[in-house]
Image 1 (cartoon, helix red, strand yellow):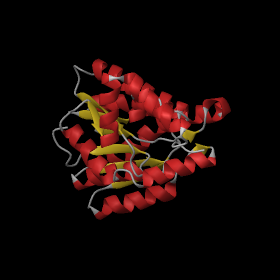
Image 2 (cartoon, one colour):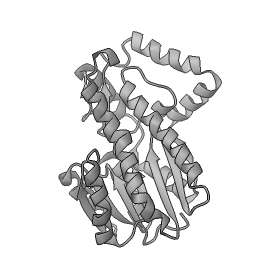
Image 3 (cartoon, rainbow, N blue to C red):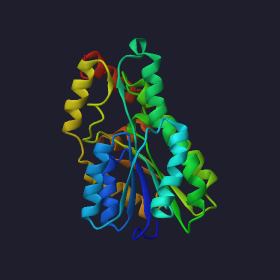
Image 4 (cartoon, rainbow, N blue to C red):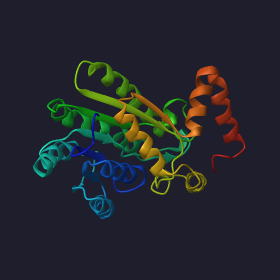
Length: 269
């Protein structure tokens, strides 16, 4: 993006964590926000923060797993803002559980939010983005897209799918005015573990780790900077950067490290 001033950004999962932080960062750079989340209460809190920066914010309580609702969202955003320049596919959930014990319903839930929700939002907003003088799509993947994590099969699979989708989309849009950024963060201090499904012991361990993780505000600044530079892939957080290096040089070592952590109960019980 050549500028953020008076641009309109749609941010999913804007009710907290990285979504809130990116919304605030965009507002500080002059953008107006269409805030999307399943929780209207959390959205109202984010909207108040955005408006305190002097920017416009509209609130859209949407379950992005409901395709017809996502399609209707486009008209709602246009009615509020008149146009859209950026789409941040950030909404995400997790389920911490060995695959053998995991229900297919929980796997579907993670897939529908993390991947199919982003897919639907992109499908319905892309024609609008292509009409603008410039546009940008941000897909928030994860370091789990590089190496599948034990007890997080659903999360890893969806984030790998989102990364591959971003690569394909980037190639398709190469000759247009719409750019794509695929974000692969490491551990970020968000509430994803608290709202996750799965075994309570594993959830508690992950939640304790995440509380000590990277500040969402720092990650948000890096993401918006990547959009400004029209950078395709952003690997942010030291753990993710280390994972990328190890997975490229010695992928078996990365897999062994996760297996060792699981054997020693480092991933929760």
